[in-house]
Length: 230
Ligand code: DC
Image 1 (cartoon, rainbow, N blue to C red):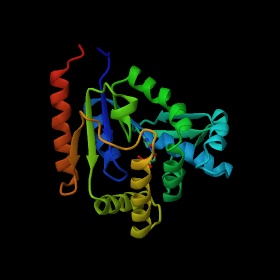
Image 2: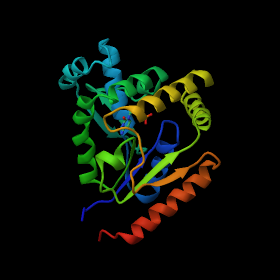
Image 3: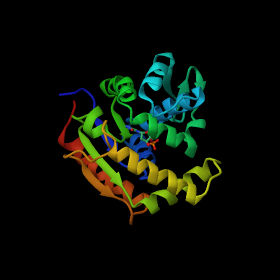
């Protein structure tokens, strides 16, 4: 039995994975790992390098030169660093969302980031969110949640979140980003977005934040009660 708990939350963009995972982590004393931010950092690096982000050999050539790291600030927020520079804000724009989705379809990129993610789960109680956490990264996670909602609901939530971060965009642009990524993330050959067979599927289309959070809390409490690590 592993020494630490791991909880996987997968689902499409804008389903509320990160806000749920962040709050669950704070509530249960786990660290929150936003794996999308790691792919976004690679996407930003490819964007800055001006290379074709769908060209696997071009992107693979870039990878060894990248120093990607994450740190947690005093508020427990995950900050992303690319070659020592804090890029946590820059990786959130719709343009970089697309770059992240593009590079994340490449097996070389997925292999490059796999061990970084698994190491975190070996050393901490983690709540990790992404697309393939329950299926590939942590297939033995203690709890797997597949969080989803209709595309329109996700676009509305994402728009609000971006506005709160001071990023200026429109509903149409966010909807375009969500549709593009839904299609690409689900149809790619390498670790496509899909619910693990043993995942609990939670559709939050008609639930508000508090209702969704209460439901997830119940799942976590049941898991901790069933599988004690002491
Ligand atoms: O969760 P996010 O929207 O920040 O993720 C950005 C992109 O990264 C997403 O379109 C797909 C990719 N991604 C992935 O392929 N695997 C993960 N575990 C997390 C994100």
